[in-house]
View 1 (cartoon, one colour):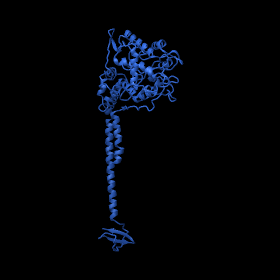
View 2 (cartoon, rainbow, N blue to C red):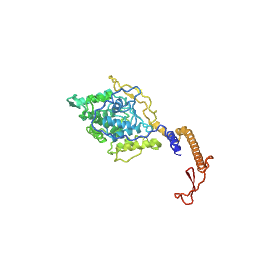
View 3 (cartoon, rainbow, N blue to C red):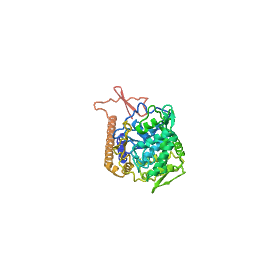
View 4 (cartoon, rainbow, N blue to C red):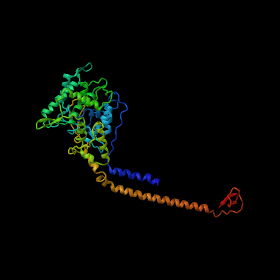
Length: 464
């Protein structure tokens, strides 16, 4: 039976598992970085490679840069673990922050069933939203590609409010004052010119979080200075600058939060809210858990809660990973709408250059991205629908064949044992015909009482 259980049962078990959850992949927590100090980036194993025609790129210059240097897959389609590892290695982002952001990306726009998300995510209202630093609001312009006028507006503010540098020259360092004024200008412009402005608290926090991230993660780790040359390298060319080092300690959520507060402090009248019939309606809040509810509850589709199997396992893990960033808030299941999650899975992108004459930093946008619809379809077809129906006859047939072969092997084994047993009985009770011993009765003291010994040509035989 050992041969039967070790060779036959596993083949049926793994085929049955594959039939039940075709293509599903369990998402696992990425390992924490061993080395978290300053390091020159990129290293010799990650040279710049311009994206190809089918490579996906999106609105985030940091993720685009990581993909162009191979810290993320060049295709622009990555797993949860790959994103966490890449932002940790490239920018020294702390593990929990990296995991929480990657989890939100996977739930809001990725395929949590196959563990895939495109960095070309450009779904309005989630990671990408109004009052972006260098992208127009969706209702009034291109919300995906860098807008040269907006980027120049940022450089103009640096020229007015930036710091001096002995290396890069006067007014060449991006200061908090320059970022404060630039972000306020973007806010005022959106309130005045975007009739469909959506600036809920979650987007409000992410918008100012972009500014904090730029100041804290794009600065050179050797001196903490973010020069305009470095800014251009990331935003325009999507490549790491020469002689650039990541920050000397892991960047945490507290670091991002403190930077947000500092950028906001110069103009506290900038508030979350939305335009309704041409009038901006503020939606202020002093509840620190509002950010968690807006990002991890209201934005994530509620339909994910009703999933099963691999998808359910992954969704539970990702929801908990987001909540880990807000340990003082009550864990809440998502309630977001699912109407927007209908695009095809990982569609071929449409090539759209970003008008960069250098040839670097070309952006290719995913027309669909890694949609949640593919995950839901795969999950709903798992054990009870098309996936199982497709494979059920094969699985049942294989199990029946395995059982039949096993019974045959058992029968053969039993018959073999019976035949061997019969031969052993016969040989122990019979002597060859040509062998005729002459009985010479002796008594051997070494034998038990009542046992007689016979000899023939000095060969002893015993008989009870």
